[in-house]
Image 1 (cartoon, rainbow, N blue to C red):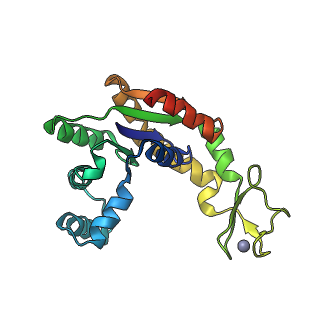
Image 2: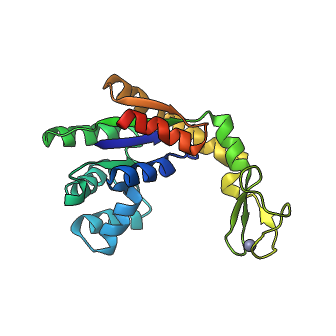
Image 3: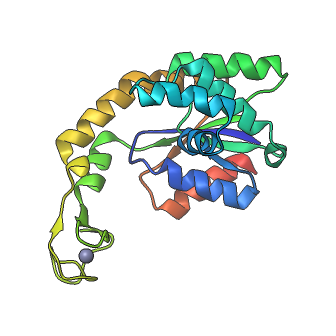
Amino acid sequence: MKIIMLGAPGAGKGTQAKMIAEKYSVPHISTGDIFRANIKNGTQLGMEAKKYMDQGLLVPDELTVKILLDRVAKEDCAGGYVLDGFPRTIPQAQVLDNALKELDDQIDFAINVDVPDENIVRRMGGRRACLSCGATYHIEHIPSKKEGVCDACGKELVLRDDDKPETVKNRLDVYHQQTQPLIDFYEKKGILRTVDGTVDMKDVFAAITAILD
Ligand SMILES: [Zn+2]
């Protein structure tokens, strides 16, 4: 079972990807992780990628797909895998698609965890962090005992810049421009499955397993 996860930043697709990987005993593959592993192990592909990263450049799609294919060729991916964070754009999806075709292979499902922007802005805007000890809270879901104060160390809790509505909205704009067309791409291929990501994480997962089982 080969799966691609789609969804806006903050939609919870990473959490779902982990849960899928655990339940179906398939690797959860994020491109960030495999880049780091290749660079750490000093592989040829890793060194090539590092050249771009050191210059602050994006790693070209062809190279990213090469690194990805190298990873999914490993034995633990024989039963499938969950891709998290790739592809992000149509060109990336096409490069991946063509590369898999050459191997007589294909993605089985693209699972779209759908959450409206306003829900994501609200979710992120409720996060609170302790910059002193790193503890995180949420004003609705995981409130601290005393408002604005860290349970663990008693320091003040803050809304991080990353979680501020303007920042979140900007990220969502980029997402809609780049990744939204992927939803149409996988829809045309007939493998798109959309689940409601606004419900409880366990219910999102139940909807996903109903598709995969
Ligand atoms: Zn703290």
